[in-house]
Image (cartoon, rainbow, N blue to C red; front, side, top):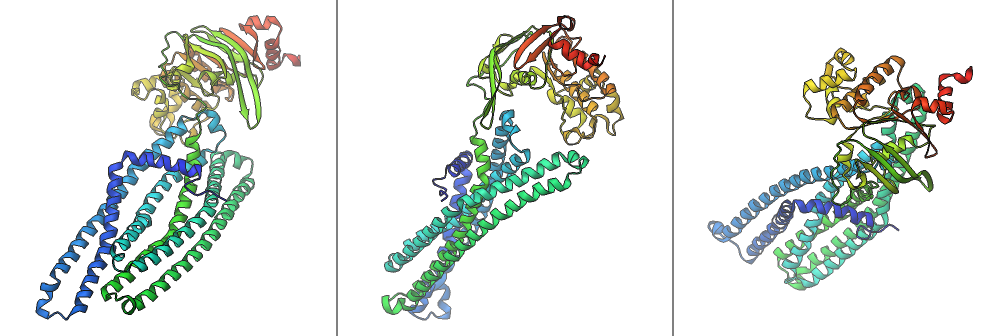
Length: 596
């Protein structure tokens, strides 16, 4: 059986995040609650109470026409004031609720964005981007649903019960006792059924998130879908996820309808008992006509509000189910995090040291050891190529330098500073990274180039484009530097995207440069232009170049050959060729010498 929202850990954690945000705007929250209470008390209960006094006065003795305002003037004035103040509370309620939702939504969106941006690459590698977006949206919407549910019917129900007790207990205590017992049974039954279907809502929300993820994955890879003619296959995956959503939603619907039928039956029982009290109230207990009207009005009002408990608990179910996904993300420990009091990394020279590092990664229950007691020293300004077969650990080494993952043992030093003790942002702002697949933002060419230096002038952006051999093709674009590149830069060719990224790295002017297979996916002409740009980019910088294509590292100062997480060879191109080892074997294989 599912746990209730009070005992479900995920629900408690969701409420924790929501309450922390609400406390920041405590004045609005208090004003919202007070206005809701005032609105409910005045318009739903003060109005009928004054009317009951008028009825009782009429029942006492006839009132002459010329005495209407004299007798009923105070009642009329009270009714007008109750409605004026009640309507003012109603408008204040609208304003405070709306304002609180706007401000809290901003805070929640910022919190989710920060949590996602500060998570490790391992975290993002194991999740659909579309699912994370869906979870963020639902997390924010769930907060709004909770606020609206609090305003109606939770607070009005509390006001109703309190008003009935205050007004009717002195007059008909036995009636109030019976009514409260029935309402307590009604609320308890609704809550018990709520507990039974709480997990159904979480499962339905999970199915919705999976559906969003499947859709986002197919759309993001639409080129592969179309070029391989796999539309039917992707449709099958989407249909399977969609059918799961239908199944989960149908189960939730049946459980909710069953609960609604049962609670409606209880409401009928309550009104039946009320009818008996109303009919026999005067002869049995001597209750005045005005009080009888008040009893019926109050009971009808509170029963109607209790009738919304079923719908409200269903809304709460949905809200907590929707919030559960992002709550888990917010609770997820950061695999890579700054230590308390982390310092800023300052790089003057660019020396890099990998000292006795150990690193493994876990995929499910499988643990893969990549490095064990690995050592490498790179002097400032040296251009180093990392080569070896796939899976040797070359790219992993660069990711450890960037702290996209954290090592389990040893130290990585930059100019003698342990990077694990420095902030991640200050570290990465000292390293220009050019990956194999250059992905651009759906922004202008100029914005993409200036990403590493947002305050760059137009002249600096243009000069970076010149140095990256990118100016010629940029000037041919429809709007030049103001051309939108499209999502992930799809409007540009691979070589053009790569040169834009190189221009970005040039403009960032970092002392350390990491190139990860930066030319492996390019045609010969594009590779030539990119190689020229990379040559300029590496000048005066400590450079680490990961490459399978050995021609791209042959001219570097030093080549390090990695095999199974160990350095097996280290030297210049000529030294390694003459050594007759692993590097020579790789070189001969790529140059076709084995064919001779």
